[in-house]
Each structure stands twice: as C-alpha cells, then as structure tokens.
Image 1 (cartoon, rainbow, N blue to C red):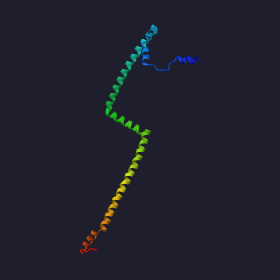
Image 2: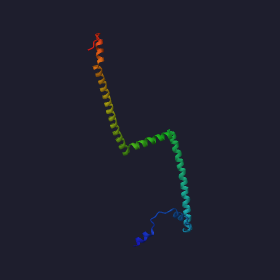
Image 3: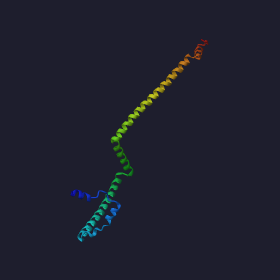
Image 4: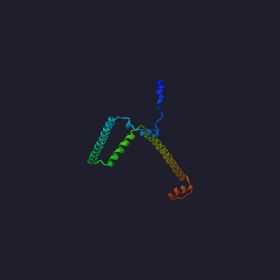
Length: 157
C-alpha cells in the first residue's frame, strides 16, 4: 500500500517549459549555508580554471598537429582523399553493398546475355536475308543471261 502511495507521488509526465521556468526561479542560495556557498564558489573557480587550462592545452595540441601535418605534406585535399578512400572501403565491406553489388552483377550478366542473343538473332536474320538474295540472284532469269554472256555465246535458255 505504501508503494502505491509513493508511486502516486511521482509524476509520470515530463517537465514542460513552464515547469522548467518554475524550477529556475527558485532561489537555492537561501537553502544552503554560507560554508557550503564558499565551498561551491571555490569548486566553481577550480572548474573554470581547469576548463581554461584544457582549452589552452587543446589549442597547443592543434597547433602541434598542424605543424606535423605540414612537415609530412598532408594538406586538406590529401586528408579528404584519404577520408573518402577509407569511407569507400568501409562502404564496400558492408553486407548491403555486397548484396547490391551481387544482384546488379547478376542482372548485368543476364542483360549482356539477352543483348548477345538479340545480336545473334539479328545477325542470323541478316545472314538468311543475304542467302535468300544470293539464291534469288542465282535463280533469276537475268543471271542466266549474264552467265552465258561470259562465254560469248549470248543465248537465252
């Protein structure tokens, strides 16, 4: 029963903007002692000092990094190329890329085979047409005249 009462005291809804404003309007300084205030001020000053020191260290390290890159001849373009190459390699090793590549490769092979078959059929059709034209030429009446003309005995058969 106590669990039900305690659970009833807890709000299940998230804070809304108006609730957040109420929380920030509360003056916590009246709730803590002067000694705690002094300790918090000291801790605040230490944290601000640490943050400042870390920013200075970071700036120095970034400067050192730039100097090393300059000595090695690494510029922005080279970095972009390396990043692109690495990203391309990483993408090629994913299973989605491999499956897509395999599917498209298979489809390409089938399309190549289909186009080859169409080309063969067209070539055969042209071959058949040439053969028919040759037969028509050989068995046409004009061809007979031409053949006899070669023997200088121009006769109609």
